[in-house]
Length: 545
Image (cartoon, rainbow, N blue to C red; front, side, top):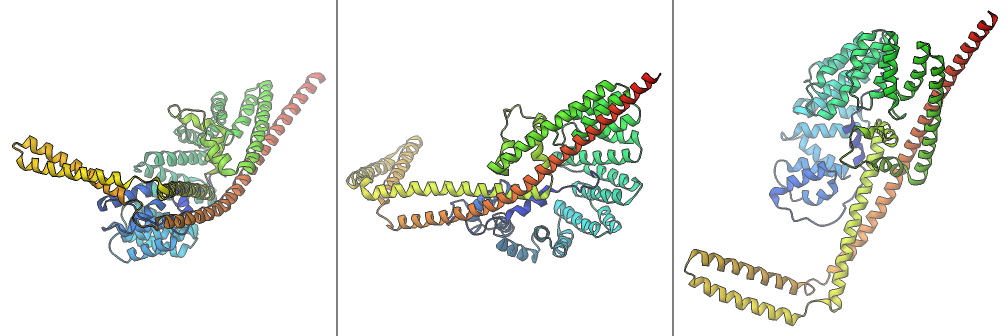
């Protein structure tokens, strides 16, 4: 049932995917200036490259360092280190609210609601802004799930207007709709949620939530027989949203109840243009036949029902092909990467990408947190393997170069000595000329020349030192290569497990979609049978007369 589906929170769901890897990626450090390290770490966290930042956090200083270090540990799979760091931060006055929020999320991922509630309580007390509102939302949702909507509503009423308050009231409306025979309370909660969304500063998130709330409110109003109110809600849903087909279907139903069958069929016709993966599209195909039937065009009604059946059968063929591809390539390759491969050029990609069936199935599949977690885990492990492969290739090239130098491929030492001697002589001459320089312009030119010669001599010294320094470099590189091979093997095993889990979820989803098409096909067959029965009775009456 549409009303019973709780609003999804993608951020919380995706955080559970971080515990895929344990152990460092590579030993070594990156020469990043101290003042740039926090920015580099933040960039790595924002782009999902937390393992790369592990090398930087050890030498990082400043008041932000402990929190950034904890986030890197968590996002790179070092869960124990990350949680320990967060607990230490939560005992201080700096970033206490943020640390408590992250600890609450971690407990929530482990289904430890009691521990999560404790940390969310601290986050609500000491946090600010978005963190505080999210913590209050979770506290309210715990009360809602415990069967105490009044307590949940009391917490929500004290929150600032914005996304989290809107989600809370939206979920509260779902509970009211299930419990009450009259949707009045649910509609009031949805109106409050819609008002709360106006304060959300993230436009994409705000638009998506607003569309879902409007579609839900329209459905409730339609169920309660308030057709004009339903039409008002549903007409505000954007035309490029995943809930648009469902909103168009209910919009058509409300118009049909008002006797406006032509406008109803227009709404259903627009819904038909979306892929059958979206909720409401299959029903819109049936609605077209029903609209012709109510308007008295029985012939067109029969044709519409037959066209619906053909669409369902074609979709079942598509689903069978998708299922076969999942078995052959895996769900990540067939569903996720397959949806990313588009014939549209980037400058043409817009809302029309919603019309692609593979993209539609991916979006609908990812509507559940379990699917989000499974896909994120496989994607994270794929990125990890790519990084390890790149590091392995770089080390192999370096090791090959060292072997080449060891077998006589280095620069001739005699030539290097001659070049250094000439460089030193030139430096001496420039120094003498600099002492005799008469004007500022001449001094600047000579000083620049002196710097160039100094850099050249430094480079020559570095070239001479290569191969004559630590003879154990090659052995250390071989050790690193062996470690990387072990990590890649471990990552491959983890990825195989993650892909198997994703395949199970995807195959179950495809089976559900196939059953949905079977159910729609059966409904259409019943409508065709009723239509033929009616026509047969009409013919009998005409014959008897």
